Image (tube, rainbow, N blue to C red):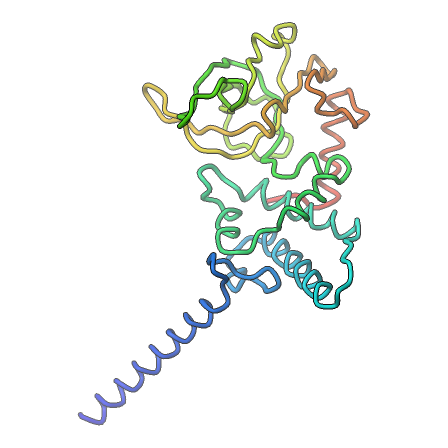
Amino acid sequence: MKDARFALRKVICLVLLVLISSMVLFAQEKNRYGKYPGNKRNPNIDNYPKAIQILDSLKTNYYTQNRQHKIDGTSFNLSKEFLKEFACSYINSYMYYSSINDKGYYSRYFNESYPIGFTLYNQMKELPFPYGFLIRKKGLVLAKVIEDEILPRQYMIKQPPSLGYDYVLKAKVIEDIFDSCDEDTIYVRHSLSIEKEFNEYNDMLLLFTFKPRGTIQRPDSVQYVYLMGNMTEFMFVDGDVIYDPNKILLDVNIDSYEELKNKLLLFKQQVGIRK
């Protein structure tokens, strides 16, 4: 009996030692902010969707090369091909795996992994349409405006509506180009009164980008609310004609909605943007 108890204690001690060693090992791999370093794969990456696994692999490659160039004292210039590949992976991860209140796989991944950094992010934003246009966008929808009202946020210092996302748009989704919106009626924060500032377009459909945010408290309910891609990133569509008073497509030679939609869908198909 004593031998059996001794053997059991030995097994338990061995298991505890392995667990503690694993915890210490992972703790040592994280930096002081609790993030896994950029030049090493996230040890939990197999628990993430394929798109984020690809993103992690590309990010690891980027930081490994960047670190080696710093050691060698040489300049590190990314190729356009790598930037486009990285941008596609990042677009895919954000579009389909970010969610309201930061609960999606995208947020979970970056909560424990080193960020991509401003340099790489800005280089992706400078890529030609639609790469740069789609960075950190949840989607692009064509919708019918139902109402658009001021619903201020709580500021520690009061700010005028023009400086913040104080308007909340309620709109019925007509077409969801990337199939990334779960709702038939969408609520979106933005910064200009569509009805007052753009009254000549009031009978037209609204075409806008959006990204996740959180919730808003209504008198009788709580509603999910998205954030417009940029504060005024919306256009108007009448039939097949796009009206772009906010100059969203300033450098893009497109004025037809069908042309824009087909260009984006072709991009989605060619680069493999999907859930």
